[in-house]
Length: 93
Image 1 (cartoon, rainbow, N blue to C red):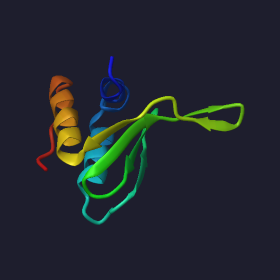
Image 2: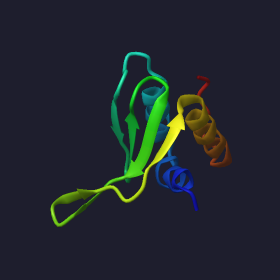
Image 3: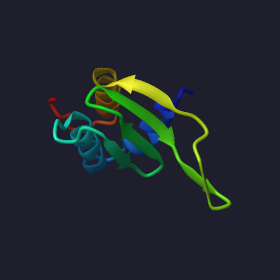
């Protein structure tokens, strides 16, 4: 299973979190930053490039075992496709 598939399963399971993630990704006011989900972090490098990764704390140290880099449109498409499968109300971006 790919990183993005694991991210979708962990994070896109309720309407409120889905909408918050889409708002963060599509916001022009947020040029860079991080969105901390339940298990995964979305790091906005700039308006078009994102990193998606889990972050674990082991022995008081931050561990990032894997990461996936995605363009904005690709990330939104994957999230919206998964949200439709979960019968969430998909936001028009």
